[in-house]
Length: 203
Length: 280
Image (tube, rainbow over all chains, first blue to last red; front, side, top):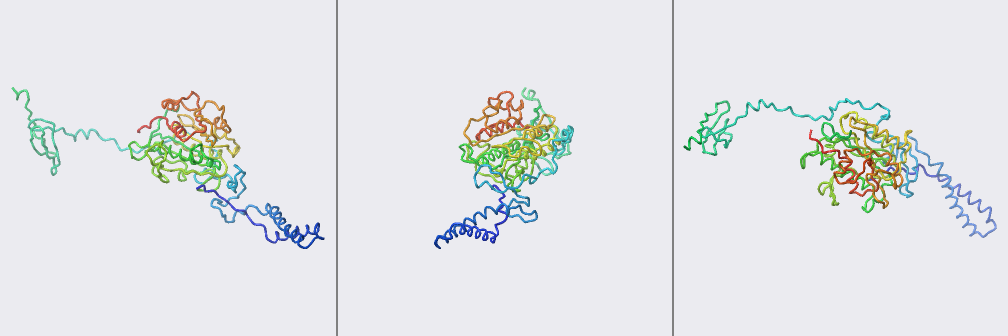
């Protein structure tokens, strides 16, 4: 998950160099100290010296061979990206965090190619904001709504509490007050509403 | 100044700078997780909070009230190596509806302080490695913040929230130290004020929390430096904090030290809330 780029050691020590260094070190030790000792002692010392010599040769030879890779050489790590690696300074002292890292440079994705934004002038105050302006539907024409709207009443009793449903090209109404039913087609005249005063009816 | 509300006509810009250096692998207080996990969790929660704020009805799609950016610095999980990398699908600044529609995954929420429900979308993964190129992060994010401010002059100024646990390792960067980079960033402005830079200083050590302090006293290194580059909270945010019954003094800085998850989310809520979003 961390996606770390771990690049391995650039090159190994050449084997002939190692062997020659070990033999030279062993012979040097034998010549100095053990010429007059028994053969077993001499052999043990020679083998030990060879091992120590090989280790020293490896340690001494590493800086010369751990050079950066040439730029055109294919990289092996997932994040090498062909850039020149360099050793990272130890941060926490834990071995698993010491690794070869890429230099701080061009960030991946969305990075500015030329910086200096801090030297530019302040953003123009009247810059358009068309990119974020919401698209809105045109406001509804209320005049049209007024012309098309109709307040309906029962033609017989004048009640406004009506049930309505589509009936073919028109509408079918039923008055909840007196149960009167009728139909109406758009474009035709509304039935004449005859409303009798309740006071007059009750007298 | 700093009175503009968030709307679709004038959306807000909230940018997170997320420390992804190697030291973020340290444990975070008693949470059982790492600092990187805690920081990613807090950012995911606040992104969800912004999505919820931007949806006018429950279950509805988020509207474009915010543009959001997350820049990780340290390890770059996509590009590899060390540097600065946009962490929201590789995009520097993303409209919140796009964030809303594209989480990496949705996982069950185990905590009791979930912002919304028991399932938490994940946009940001915890990542750590390498050093702490904080100056480069400001330089990279600043380029995009500058461009955003130029195209939204009537919006609330950008809010940049830096979440880190330690020392900057690339100061000076390109000839300027951290304080200079912060000054450059906060010099970006809209008609309603300068860019706000808030800092969240996470620590693996056990120490008292410092929330919206007015002084850097008693803060461990690099707390004083982070405090110094933190913006003073504008009056609108102070009013929000006091409205939420947070004791906050005049002149308080947008800075928190050693916060737990609840405090961190709380800090982010106050730091990103100017006023209720306006439906226009």
